[in-house]
Length: 130
Length: 140
Image (cartoon, rainbow over all chains, first blue to last red; front, side):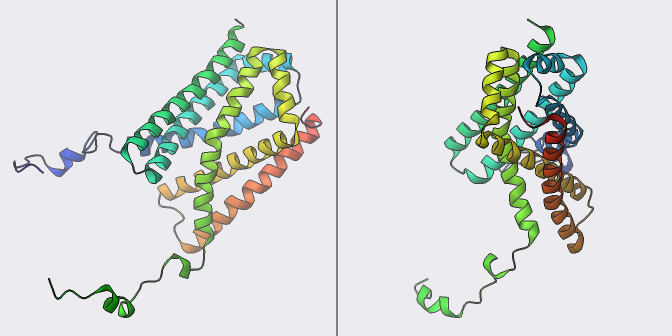
């Protein structure tokens, strides 16, 4: 601890990013995506179920139609964002060794981004037909 | 500090606070664990969603392979479990959103919401699968 007097008020130190440099950002994003996930998950379930018995051409056409594609993209980004924060909390709760924790947090981010981009690419491909 | 008592003389008389195993296991604890477990399961389940989307985008052959995998009994079991985990985590999450607004902290409310999460998720899962079979004639 520094011996120099700290002239900043407690309020100034907790404002913005706070002393931990991340503040309550994760908490807020977890709630934000949770609220978004409720209608998106319901819509996602309806879309998946309506497509389960169909042949490939019908599924490809439906997933590529603008409204369905937009809903699925929102669903994917909200869900992967939410799960990335959630799994980071789980890792931080159970993994206490710094190197292993860092490696798992990095892998967690890679996995979430990979799932998001792979899914988004598939939907874009179906939408634009390239 | 030479007079410090040894552990042998101290342990028998020290009063112990009741530990976890003393308490009756409340349903809210089970639901808390279930929320985390279903969240972790859904985390890996998104890879299946990505597989499905990539299979559709790749063409009829890749899609047929996915359909074959989803049609096996283990594939059906995973999809059924996925549906339940999704609904359980969603209902559990809604419960957490109420708690964030400082609603539902009474003992009766906590227990009621925990039971509603469990029975609601199971009932909705069965309903969704029955409707799916009714309207699409099963997962072909």
